[in-house]
Image (cartoon, rainbow, N blue to C red; front, side, top):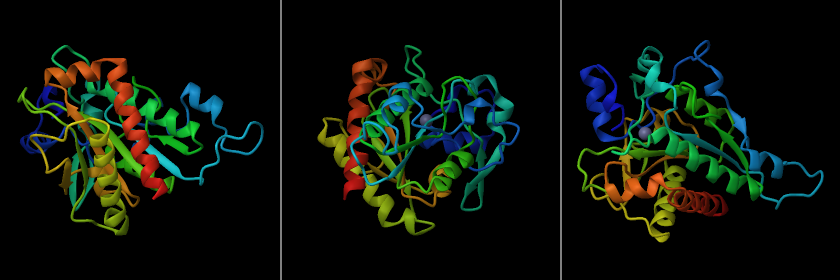
Length: 281
Ligand code: ZN
């Protein structure tokens, strides 16, 4: 539940936000002018990654990987809360629906914001994958901009012809005892990629996180999986795509883990390994 602190959200929006931290908001929308530096697509843009991952065969060749493309989508953005008009603008969300461009995301009771968590974890996941020779594309390259809108995020994955698209979020259930991660995927599928490939990616992600010691959600989905028809980024994807809700930021134990560098590294390690496992299968 993300945009809980947003000012006055329409009733419909409020209802949609009940189920997930926002699921990355919504849907597509042309973000022409509204595409500030935040909605930038960067290829292996993190410092470590860019310096160590020239996907070419020039100098010291990186571990050769099959040339697979991974699109990593860090939920929300640091400037969303201060730009309500841009963020609340309705964009296509798939299945004939519209949704707000994006939401602010949630935060821990201690004030650590979801957008910072998702950005940090995503960068670590990207660095790990880039170091293994995968091409990594990010839907946003900083944690201070606005958006991009959910539909644009889906487009980035589609345009990159991604072999796997992984959105990273953290939830904000008002129940402090609720905890655990879940992996959302589009259901019923709207295209072939949303069928078996996305389900396989979701299961591989679930198995990876679980195998690395993370508990499955006690309050959403079943056995760590959550079929969803209302998440724009998934609805609009034509590539295998999932959305990982890493846990509940309002649960004290998970909040502590998410707020620490070691905890974030743990999430990143498990997520990167799961993506690699999926791409290798
Ligand atoms: Zn979120």
